[in-house]
Image (cartoon, rainbow, N blue to C red; front, side, top):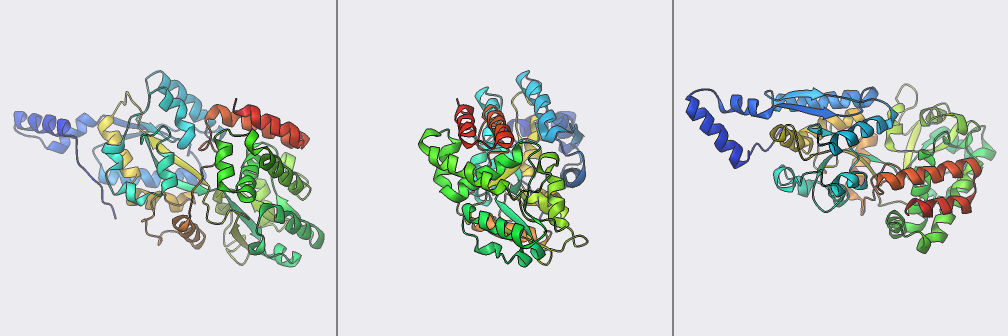
Length: 426
């Protein structure tokens, strides 16, 4: 499955062959190797599933390109914030790494607006059948300003509802019968009344989980057009839908775990594992914590598409952009072609607990839950980008929305939070 397109630019080829014939010896690859320089890639995968996954990716890359020297220069911490700070400084000072881990979509707008990213449609996206293998959502995220500037490597789905099978059965709830977000309130009440468990595991220690939950509720209760209009800053026209979705999340709140304000998402997820909560909304990285030892898939835990969002696959993705002033343009071109290949995505994603953005990656390396997600993705009618992870809104707007959610989880005041959401886009 390790096919890759090795076409070089004519200029490089001529330069290399001229050098080879002038020297009358030495292999073409040896000369190219010198021309390559070192590939410097910055990322924040320094522990857990991410560290294993990125190692697997670079092993596959080095097998295909043993002559390219790879310098992984990771920056850990802050859920990627620390890396983003480092990259912003480097790219805007025209001293970028070869590439780096970045959310695609609107998150890259500061760089495309400053004209700091290269158009890689010809050099990368026209190879490896990438355009036909990627669905519309990931392709759009790769072109935040209309040109292909980055290559998505993985997809995490946002619109999941996880649940503890025993708890919901004991409560008399059938998760697959809940048709929209407002109907979930009744299911949470049943869990609360009929079991010892909290209706919904959640964390309100930081605002992003609630922003993610609210955006998913908006999509499920009011549809794709309303969600898209919100991400475009059409707030007043959608005031009712925005306030209604905030109210629904507020209705969920009375069924959260008592310690929601002092735990992170991993501790909240532990309550599903321990049978202390019925439901949990989170990206599919949450499933990485469930194992046959603590909770078997389908017998102990299960997942449905978040009520009202059937047919949608809300995307969070990581990608690798191609900066201008690139220190190693040829090596970077090869690396990005590799990131977009079947081989790379087959190595990386099973270890990361994500699915490939290519729809032609064999499923055999993936477990039953991710195989189900791959099928849902392939059959999805739309792939809306995540708000909470910066794919749907630019970084400044995202910071403002996080502030609005911080207000919400401290006051649970719908009107005041709506004002904050409206101001976030100004």
